[in-house]
Length: 220
Image 1 (cartoon, one colour):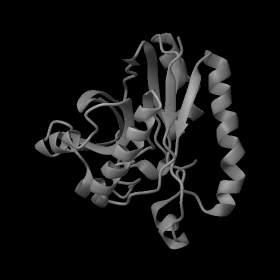
Image 2 (tube, rainbow, N blue to C red):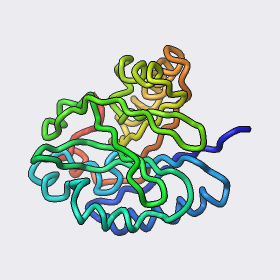
Image 3 (tube, one colour):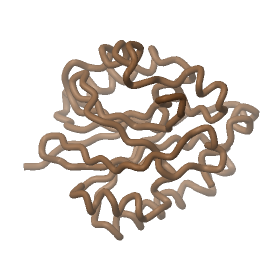
Image 4 (tube, rainbow, N blue to C red):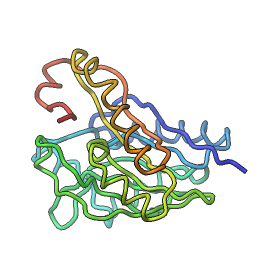
């Protein structure tokens, strides 16, 4: 018997967690009605992809805090396991993190291990957790992680059969045209090297060019 998985291609929510959660809930309900067991959202989805340290600290979430408990209470009470990116803080250190949530319970987290030069505000993660839903074992990479064979090989060695890639590639059109095929080609290499399937989620939409320039491109 097969398992149904899905990725959400979402608009960007910039420092608007309540709207991001409302959109997440709607998408989860639709996915649940189709029998989806696993639903992936983009990198840094909950607060937006923020790499400037001062701003990141203002919006970062401590997973042990009452504020995060309130966020969990806004997740769907039923439906698929959800993997979603956020900006995390713990012991005053910032992380680019993806969490796995099922029925308002935090199942675990993965912290981005390979950081871009523009992501100096964050600390790299060092763990490779394996999650399971309805018999499907999977690991997570966050965007730039997929450029490094070891990140996916660790998932395969730990017994995963699927790699969930949370990405946030809001690029100027000229760079998007350059990289749109290179991303898939590199991720295809990871699948062939490891035998893993891959599920990738990203954002869609537009930003003005000055904002993109100030934030930096999520590519190296």
